[in-house]
Image (cartoon, rainbow, N blue to C red; front, side, top):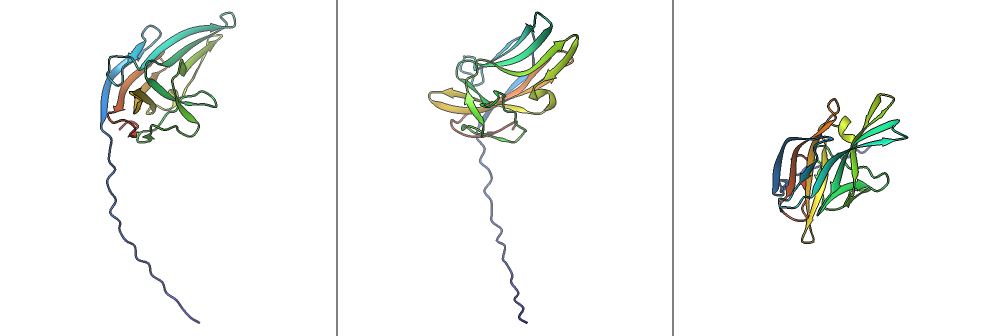
Length: 185
């Protein structure tokens, strides 16, 4: 019987620290978005609105059903990561990389209107739907295009379903074009 003993040598490779992209953080001061309070957001601070948050009260089926739709519009140079299969928006956990390129089934698109969350009421019974309701610490990846260059960013929001509101908490945008940033960081 022959016994062969092998050993391996593990080299401890020195890893380079991740180089972070310079980012401008914006404190949105818990600004409410409600049926009577829409909000324009100039993420890149160039004097033009990139995103518009608006709430619509819509009635259906001869007023038997009403909906309160919390919507986001791309205005100017803003783009949103939208799933091309069901038109939903992408929500990211803190620390997930936002790249200037498309995410799997999500594409960077200008949105005429995308519903972030909504309250449907039928016969005095209400039901809320939307990703921000069940994921309180999540980030909406966004992108601003200027001079044929893309600047990645994110917006942090919070749902307040008891008071029919959404709050804008913070946002960020990369100061360098075509660079990735981390959601919430």
